[in-house]
Image (cartoon, rainbow, N blue to C red; front, top):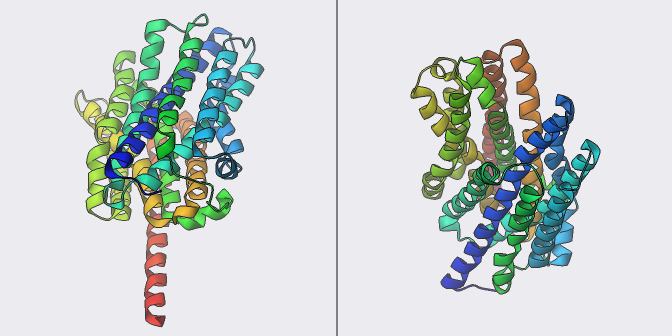
Length: 392
């Protein structure tokens, strides 16, 4: 179905609005998990396992989800996923032990994986190539604005009783409303080919590296930047402020990055982001103790870190055939989750020996290796193109 310009705008607005609600669900779920399990007196490793539960749920669900979305349809998959996740939020309020909590969080995240996958595939199918980077930037802004609102909601309603669970359930289920309203404008994924996420990584390998970069950098900094600030001698309030500024930078700088990705080479922008990330992280030890400098650095870092995801997703839309988008996007999300698990674990271990220098060395080495892989893939692709042209 070919959409009119107005229909295209309404279609994209629906899925971007829905992503805000999904972001709120994630933003409430993470801190609520930590606070609840702390109040139950659970050990740190149990709390860490509970924090990894969303990634586990998504990784378990994602291999089969492209096939599920294809057979069920875009809108049913997104609506059912949002409603099931909302029901799981309510079940969390009834959980009385860590095992039940973690199992429910895994199920909730597996359900949320459906609107996540279908929504991003929807955006890449509907967005025009000329503005793809800016459309995906708007999507990222909506999602992370919702994510940032999660802790603010908890600060107002508290973390005890059934209220936070009811609000989380309502916010998650609300994500289905704009999708239902725009159901006649949704792309049809029924004709998509099913390719396993492992094989689908070959469809856009450079984008997959971006996804891994995004996962380990984003989750590593969100998880550990407060600890970095404390290790540098900042008080608790200033260390927490760095996390807020990092998130704000990610939100504010996405649209300029999307504009740049649309006007230049998206792969070139991804390589520039990796170089900028390495330089910024190397300046952390000297910048953190200095008022104003640390905050400015956190703001720019936030934009760079979130940029890996939005630029990488735009590369998927640019390079992958329409019929393979769902499978490629599933692979993209899997690589993001692998990075999300890898980054905090390796960085956390390194920080036990040297809190600041260990973190810096770990993330710089990971980013440098990823950037080298991206350069190798880019040069290999150019070589294959030249060989094909010569034969032609």
